[in-house]
Image (tube, rainbow, N blue to C red; front, top):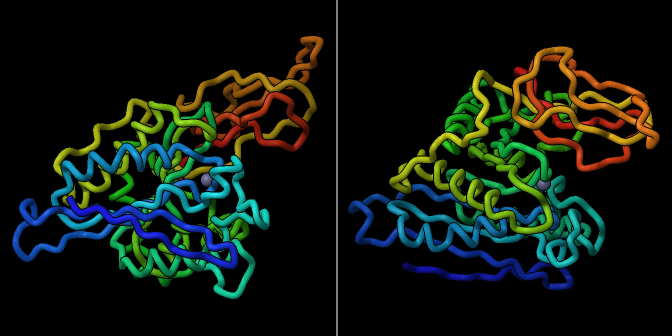
Length: 326
Ligand SMILES: [Zn+2]
């Protein structure tokens, strides 16, 4: 199986990016069938490590099973962040995933984004998958960007095919924040947001597991989700089984959960992935004495996607990420 590792020299400090390409061997391909091209990226947020493990897990699996096309895998887009356990690019403390398509003459992070973007575009992908991590107490999910910059006809087609592919991950599918916040948070300048809005190519983000170490179950879940999406493109034989946490009854979108209005110890009262009615108890805030300061209730039907990774909470802080009906 051909496997090449190429390195992309970036910026003044020459950060190297590792790219591994797995192409279906001629004996498995039908004559004349070039097949789809998929880019899988991981660790753009340097403290979100599940995708690094998932890429390592996928390499032998793809070598053994890829039937059509080619998969280009970046085990990390933020190698210094990986080393330093930093979400942002350590050199200038910028969030790389809000800078695409980058700027060849900009800050180090903008130059890194530009180099990644040019490299991704050069592969002419049919699908881009970006691997992230939410929180230790979370269900895994496939996240869909909003093609806010596209006209209606184009928008429906590319969003529709991204939705179909995401569903074949076997995971719960969530749409991004509502459009006003999607734009305000500059999510159209995330890697997947830029791919969807600028290349008009389907893109899916996978969020699974705790951030800073390789949780075996989360790595498995992520690798299986990627294989499920490749199956949707006819690139591997086996389809992904629905994940045990998969929530039906959507479409769902992610939103900030209810906010604390007091300061104290955050005590979660529900697990992620359980359907809640409006008014159901989500969490309590208690004083260190044990006194109940506040009960926090669901503001609408939906479910907790992830619990905030914190124990001390102050007024105004959301206590979870919540999924609402779209
Ligand atoms: Zn992330």
